[in-house]
Length: 158
Image 1 (cartoon, one colour):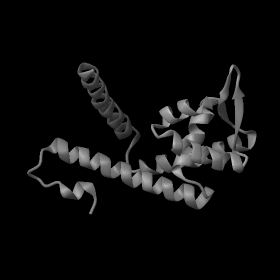
Image 2 (image 1 turned 120 degrees about the vertical axis):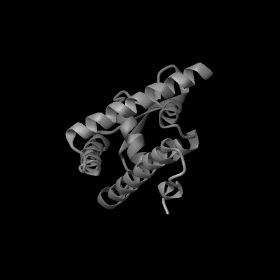
Image 3 (image 1 turned 180 degrees about the vertical axis):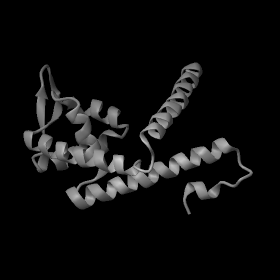
Image 4 (image 1 turned 45 degrees about the horizontal axis):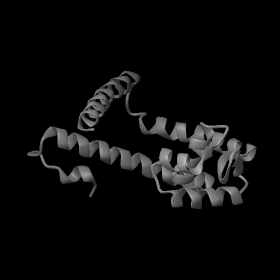
C-alpha cells in the first residue's frame, strides 16, 4: 500500500494532494534507482555526489559536498572513497590548509557522469510523458507557487 492509499475521501484535498506528490516522487525515484543499478552498476547517492562535483569543476571540500547533499560527512567520505578507488574522482590539496582537500571528478568520472546524466534526463522525461507540454508547464507553475509560499513561511519563522 502506498502513502496515497492511506488517505480517504474525508481527508482534506490538500492532504490527499501531498500524499499523491510523495507517492509520485517515490515511484519515480525507485525507477531511477533501478535504472542506475541496472545500466551503470551504481547508486543514486553516488550519482548525486558526482552531480554536485560536475557543477563545481574546481572541486568541493568534503564539508561543502556534505552540506550540498544534506548528508553526514561520513556518508560523503564512504562514497568518495569508493569513487576514488574506481578512478572516477580525485582528492587534491587545498592551498593553505594541510588538513583539507578538494574532491573533483576525473576526466573518466566526468565522461561517465555525462553518460549517466543523459540517461537520467531521459528517465525523468519518460516519467512525465503522460502529460502534455502545457500540463507540465502548468504543474511547474503551480508547484512554484507552493514552493514560494513555503519559503515565505520558513523565512517568517526564522
